[in-house]
Length: 330
Image 1 (cartoon, one colour):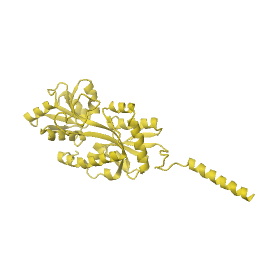
Image 2 (tube, rainbow, N blue to C red):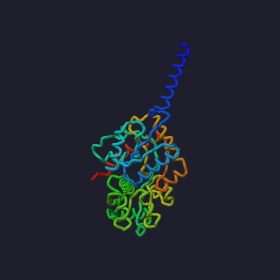
Image 3 (cartoon, rainbow, N blue to C red):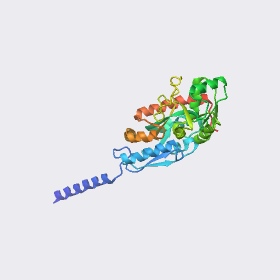
Image 4 (cartoon, helix red, strand yellow):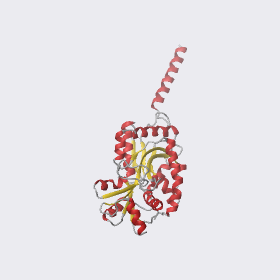
């Protein structure tokens, strides 16, 4: 009887332990991640390129991986407020942020006294997409090619104007780099956002528009805006007939904006690897590529190490670009 009692007790303990293991929440970093909703901070207002991409990724992760991912807009200070909130979160894998070049690579060199340093306080997880900068003009403009712009700027230096979404953005700095590459002097007119710059370019109040492709592609398709060049190394699949700046005579010119998921530093490596794999799986799907292309961007999957290298290399590179441009936050 004693032997039976001992056996029964051992069995009960074993069953209890097994039941507890089945009902206990999995720790972050385990193979069962995630066991609860994931919050994805969007550090810009609804409706912009970053927001659209973030919600697209969140929705598709729900469909393919059966994860619950909630996009949460936290705009302000050029995207740095949402980054700050993410940096301060616990590194459990349940707080992510959709970052991009402007707020993670350029912003830190523009804003004083940020409470974080991106390469120290954030972990790159998954690259999602990139988009070139576009140089365009009104359909009624005298400029038919980028060469026309350069010729006019050399003939009358300081008279050709271009509008951008604001001082210190990657778009403004792309314009500044083009001035340096072509040896011309243009007049930068900063606006508070892409749409006001676009409207003034359409009306002829500025000669050129320097913009992201998503912000301008609607007016290009309607025939109101004439694209002259894109600044990426490769042509945009959204605008395959538009030459690159490099093809227009400035070899090696390559400026684009990237978007990707980050987490607080210290997030378990197993979580980082898992999220990277799931996002890259999405980016391989034809319907996902098409959805991103429809926004004027290009889907691009990278490994964790590749994205980390891109992030760190860009951060070091753009310090000198920002300083040389004299860009300041007003």
